[in-house]
Image 1 (cartoon, rainbow, N blue to C red):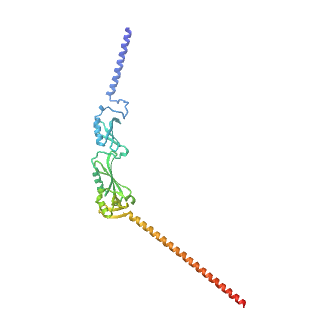
Image 2: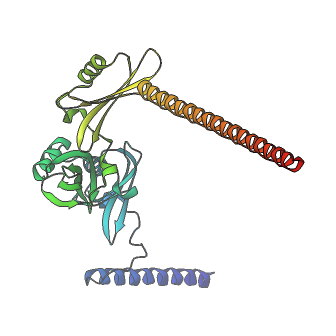
Image 3: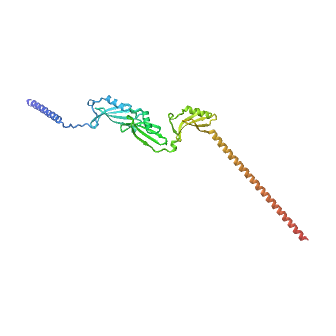
Length: 328
């Protein structure tokens, strides 16, 4: 019995001694500054207690960067750097991910799906200010404005149509207003330049004024009004429906109100009918001429027959004379 107790006590002493040795070795490694090998991957989760930034602070930074609703927040490590990955859904249903340093709050990366198209981002410059900067750089009519993110930089892409119908794109920094790039595209052909829609804010005449001018030129009910460009000229196309159901298109200069053209479908149809009547008249004349020609041919044949009869009569007379001479 005593021997068994001594063996148990001896085993406990050995175990305690081994634990002491292992603990001393670990402390020694830590004291000497030698790296401790970790099985944690680079992109592994991190405890919030190990980050200076709270989750809410990370959300505030992300929503200040991108307008959207928070969908998910994760605290990870990226190349041994603690980062918050904040995923947001924008108003146009695009997904955005903002990567934020979990200690100092720096925005490390912003990713938007579909090539950053249609992203809504908080920027210092307004859309109108970007337009003013672009039109001061290039003389033309604004066609389209988009706010995009290029290499984490907010950029207004302002597309303009110059007076020679060429398209020019001006890239304006969304925060500083600096012009980053001006690109002139290939000149469009005349067909593309024609019938191009125009903004009402870029012309002097209002739609109602164009309607008033059109209704003084032609009687009818307004069916449609379009503001277009024809050969570089802004034009109101006012379509009126008359009482007989035909359409009258009145083209009016959108700046000075001059009536450029009136196209009446009823008159066009009338002209077509007159043309058909003329064609029928010519056809009748041709028939009359053919009838006269046939009559002439008949008369000629009758004359030929009479001449043949006369010739036969003369021949009979000659034969009669010959018979008389024989009798004598």
